[in-house]
Length: 192
Image (cartoon, rainbow, N blue to C red):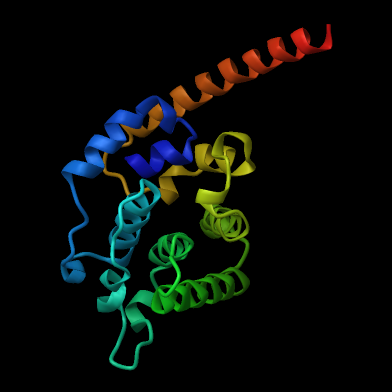
């Protein structure tokens, strides 16, 4: 849910709730029971909020030679989350940097080998935007990424109940109208 709120660009409405949720639910260090998507998402969310999470949580997704496991290499959304998580590496986290490079290569390969049909169109748009504009380096509210998110949340978020996502989508649209109105008023004031 926190990921969706951030991608819609409305996280400033929920700062206290996000902080509370991240404090209550620390990253489950036993990534054996989780998939790459969940571990990378939790890692990124915690790092973005300033929590230090050791990068070795990704070690279970590597084989004995240090390469990403074959199953992981086919998990496109997991690779996307890994790529975004790797953007938050700190100096000396060589394995995380390598995982980020590998995930980028695999995502670029997936983009070039999958046809431009309706089944893959949303995925291609999301992946190409994520590779070009990392989430933590962009302003979702002011980017094309935000509108992409608004139109393709069913692909991007692993959700069971889309009711709350629809509510966030409406809030994001309303928030966008309010902010644009404020900006227009400010421009009028400055131009006088």
